[in-house]
Picture 1 (cartoon, rainbow, N blue to C red):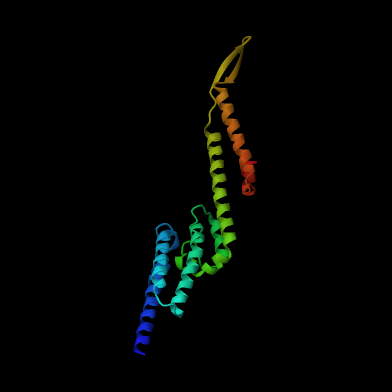
Picture 2: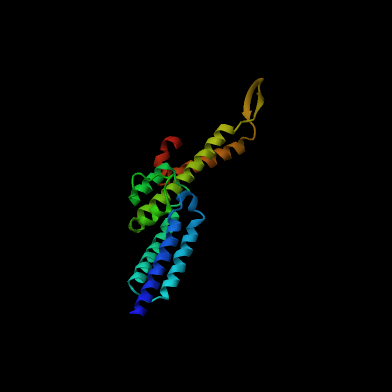
Length: 206
């Protein structure tokens, strides 16, 4: 009986250590934690997986291993949830997909909120990937539109006067270079229109 009590005490000690270490991650704010903590969390569950593999597979150890397996499945999806390319509407959509509480905002989002949502995250993996692709695709389009806008606003034509039968006609100097730039930007616009994320920018591209 004493041996059984000692084993139980050791097992629940492991559980407490695991829980305390996990709680240290969970209390972190996601916007500040997402870069430095993302790989640290992977180190955490890999370390614990190796530790638990050396233990007798009692109920507690099996429970912890199941939880770690869930973390492993969710880890690639957590990377997509870093939201580096997200705008406000993308975050709102992510919160809806993960079924987060209505009082959770981007400013108060904690890592715990995402950890608690890992079962939903795994189930909705396809939707999260599509959302991430959409956000990244829109970044590319937005940057291209800004590039075009800057070019249009800042490009100046250098003119020269051409004399023809006593009549002065202004002509664009280095017009071949200008036409090449216009052609390049036309090609860029056509490529943007082929993007499956184009519809949200149709009014800007024309």
